[in-house]
Each structure stands twice: as C-alpha cells, then as structure tokens.
Length: 134
Image (cartoon, rainbow, N blue to C red; front, side, top):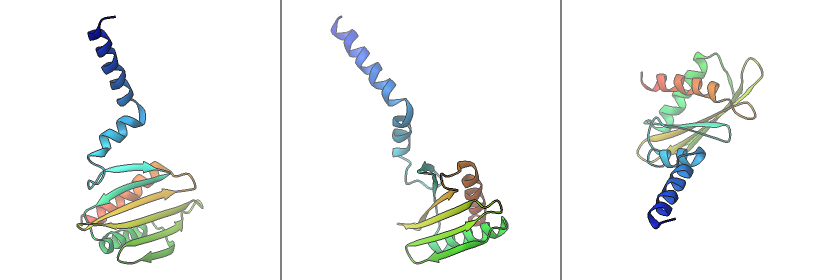
C-alpha cells in the first residue's frame, strides 16, 4: 500500500469512530453543553438549563406540577439548590433537582421512576418552560 492510501484509511477509520455512538453525541454536545435549552439524558435524569434564577425556576416547577395535578412530598430550596420529590397517580416516583449556575442560569434535572422515563421527563420540562415564559 502506498502512503496516501494508508493515510486515507486512517482518516476514514477515525471519522467512523468519531461519528458513531456516544462519541458523536459528546462532540456535538461539547460546545452547547452549558447552553440554555439544550437537553442531556444521563443516568435516567433528563437535564436542561433555563435562563432563570433558581427561585424563579423552583416556583415555575411547583406551578407546573400543580397544573399536572401532582403534589410534591418533598420540597426544599436554598440559594444554590432545590429538590422536589413526589408520586404520580400510578405510583411512579418523580425526582427533580435544581442547581443554580452562574449568570442566572438554573439547571433542572428530572427523573421519573427508578430507571427514568425520558418521554415523561420531557413533558415535565415542557410544562416548566411554559411557566417560565409567561
């Protein structure tokens, strides 16, 4: 094999590795990871950053839960973090963590059930986002 062909194969092999599976997601998300409105799904938690203070995000989360007729069994908040837990009508637990970030950004992570439910977590996020835009 000539040197040009070997170089081409190396570049193509590297491109396949980078563009497959988690590596592509990591590289694609690296620039936008701290961006407002971007989602990540890790260990059953669906995370999103909001352009809001932790107090505003916490109150919007409680209002969204009330709209969904969900009553928290645990509510805690301080200047840096918040935690809300509860049960849905079908007995499924939900867990919501809020973390204050610099520049009035709040990260909210939501986990539904033991292993997480991305679709239900997405609904929660949509309801919270709607409360924050009012």
